[in-house]
Image (cartoon, rainbow, N blue to C red; front, side, top):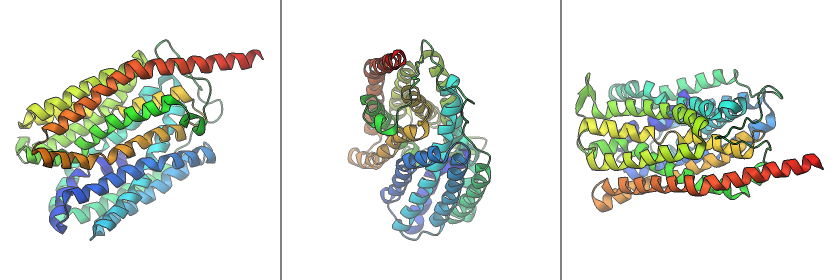
Length: 407
């Protein structure tokens, strides 16, 4: 998870160098980012089905090894791309590879640790959220010294090789090795495993999907546009701390906060419940977007408010897979969580709209207001729609199981 992190979170460092080298528009380059996110997510249901079908011993190994190969090939293509379509091909391949790694690791976490599912998924997803913090400085330094092409090539090759080797250490739990479900007063878990087709027929899944899209879109806008926002505020290259510029400090802090959010809010959700945690996190997120848009034009304010956004956005990657598995069971957890994860791909195509909206209004203020509102809508959905809907579905599942047991 750490090794695929900067495919997404380090992307912003490559955008301006590519635009300058080839005369491409930023909007055209960001299509590659959208394609990466789309294929990283939309291919994961197939990845999950393959993993679950191949079984606990072979499935995780084979999928992650293949993902490592595609990650390396994708970034090597990025390094030699001289046209936007070629750049898009690299994004597609690296997206498919990263998705295979991501889906498998999250699927493993929800299967192994039913009693601490939120924390386990959060710790796993933290590798993806915080992993890029380790490479922000070396990537930026290598781009400055050797060019973005060489940086794409060597980071892609090294990351892919290490992923391929590490893949052979993975496996899912065998029958009886891990609990199927562990319910508490706050966190209710079904004892029945829903097939993917059954999941797609429930209103609970589609409500989760809409909520995921709304929060993910707002977070991806900040992720993809952070360097451009800092430049627009005129603070990107302001030296802030120990020789580090505002953008460099912000990227490091943001990645750490993004990673920390996942186990933290995952742990909180194990204690107070999934929907209550969603309301807390996304409510704070809405406030954070507004603060960055209104008060983020000074260097330290930019770093602090951007960090708050990442801290209250990254937890979607622990809360939603945990909620999905709690609701639909663990047998098909990899593919079911992957079906929900495709919401991230859907939201990716909203990211370029941020540039369009900013160009129309002349500032980022309207974009931040829209993202704040989206987060507040999700708070209301979590408390007043999702919570009663899940309660009713789980009660119905329990009643059905009891009837079958007595008959």
